[in-house]
Image (cartoon, rainbow, N blue to C red):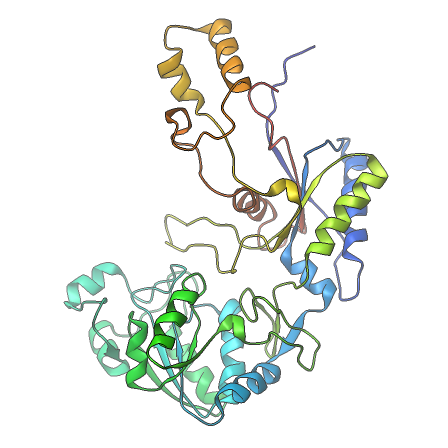
Length: 396
């Protein structure tokens, strides 16, 4: 038998344009099987079928309108001034949500973090902050002071001045707005005790701190948790993970996803006899070294996955073994020694030197990041990704 020379393979699978009401389980299963027949590859046990969250939510019809958002925030705050703090800088991710909130409120104090938002979109550079003499950990800037220090800066990639953009968006919706800049969430309490904190991964801490100071505070995951006029909601994540659909609607993060992944797994088993794993993925968890943007604007990489994707890799570092344990060997003798070591490795290598340099992250975060890079965010037309050989190692 010839030695296997191919490791992990990630394939983008083309699918029909998925619309509300489509059977997402049937679409995914038929797309994968048709692709395997067309391209001449076979499915194997432990293959991973991954589906982007966008098409799952679209099939579910999980949408809400800006009026739905307006009604929700108005029910929580009435006519009081509301601080909207730590928004990310995104026309796709946040602007339409902000429009909905502005429609339901009379006055907003919009508090930007600086020099960047949580996911790495910069208003200004760290160098500019250093040159200004401002201490971003403690200094609160008014809009006027911010403009005096930094002028009118446009985002490096989008060409948008987000301060001006968000300000105009709010006023166009009929709300009054005041802009401030601060990184301590408690700064908003000098303006109002009603707060919507829009940070994603630090939201629980922000809410805890503000609640301890007596604030009436809701996070984005508290908004649109029950169905609105369009029938959409997300009981767990609310507006987190949402994307712009139209100028007045957002597509929410998919809800109740476990039946989807379990259904796909069962159908593939029925049709092919193979035991595959299935996951739904959103943003990958990685950072762009040039733009400094951290990709993960979703609350999680994967909102649902089958049981075989629980946990994290338990791998040894081949170069460590080659340079240390088996430095005296080479050629076939070295190869066999490493294979034998892998076959007999401990079931939990945490803290063991032979695992140093491996990636201590959850399988769903790693595989979801691979899938996000494979499918892209544009016009590839591959919302399904098939990952093969991910659980193989040097011995297989």
